[in-house]
Amino acid sequence: MGRLVAVMGAGGHARVISSILKANQMEIMGFFDDSCNDDLELIQGAPVLGHFEDIVQHGDSLEAVYLALGDNLERRKWFTFLVQNNFALPSLIHPSARIEQDAAVDIATVICIGAIVCTEVEIGKGCILNTGCYVDHESSVGDFSHLAPGVTVAGRTYIGSNTFVGLNAAIADGLKIGRNVVIGAGSVILADIPDGSRVVGVHK
Image (cartoon, rainbow, N blue to C red):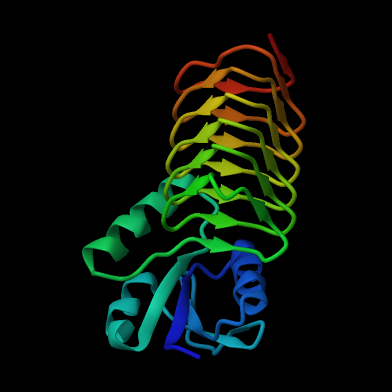
């Protein structure tokens, strides 16, 4: 086993990241989060060691750092901090996820249990493809976007950066979803969505 890994974040998503790391037989040194207090907190057996910036004190001990921050802008912020401090930020893929060989997954992206990424798909850096989501052929997901559990993205669809797609939403084929978009849970998207939009329900 190599050096230890650490997790940025100690909320609900940190439990998901912890379980994926364990499924990949990685050993977690600890978690870092600004909400930590003086009492020792354990997450699935590993301690919360300090605030976010305290991680720089442990750089020599860490093989890699994984982001456990569901908010897209927070994830981008701490990604930038970690890159500036020379931490390795590899992608993290649950063993049960299916990723086609010709799909591309950039650094710091997490692909959760049961997700499917089909042929010629491109996933940007710092993304979350949550439990059981599906991205079909030749689609792309921009940097720091988050597909919630059960999301379905049909083929040749473009999703811009910093976009959130809510629980069980479905996006039809060949569409362009802009940057900084929020799509509500259960929505059905049948037409393009411009940058900065918020959409709930059927969009056509």
